[in-house]
Length: 241
Image 1: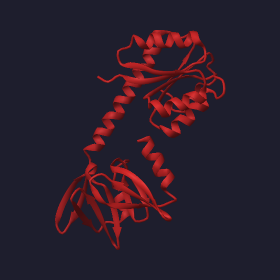
Image 2 (image 1 turned 30 degrees about the horizontal axis):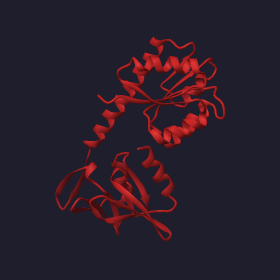
Image 3 (image 1 turned 135 degrees about the horizontal axis):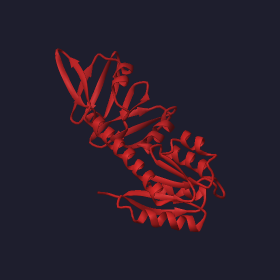
Image 4 (image 1 turned 90 degrees about the horizontal axis):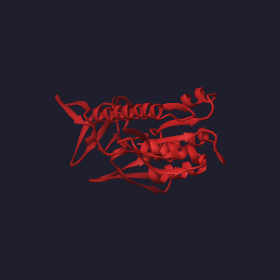
């Protein structure tokens, strides 16, 4: 099984050494990078794409709490365990959706307990994504009920009073409007423009086209329009997915 990648942010060398030693003995986790301040943590998260951050709160340049907030803007699903010498930050830590909060001195059993929580949370996330991958969109046209796997949909395009569902090598037309369809599609879909909904997992590139943008898809010639008002939100959603 692939080991879960961790970045440890801790400015005290002794504590950092202890954390690394404990994690090294755990078969499911791997420390891929360490750092000693919040600014470096943000930089490393963008480079190494870890599943878990273990961060001290009191660090130089930028404290662990603020650094994690910035990391979550880039990678919303990242798991976090805070480690600190004080318990006064616990409420704020859990407000940032921390998996756990450990007060020093660090005990191996307590750290392993927190790591098991992370494993369970990631397993649930994976199962949820797999479940979403099996979802099907039901569309009835001309007396025929189509059961379309959502993973097969590239984008949905509004044309007049109808909507066209773009699939590989074919399209399906429906009288449902874009708003109705957006409510029935899963979280991998994004309303990118008043005329379409895109599957963010299918996008291969986004190109500026005068005052708007065009999203291109692997295996599909047709592009989808992306509003300039939506482009930043779409890019953030792609980065966090």
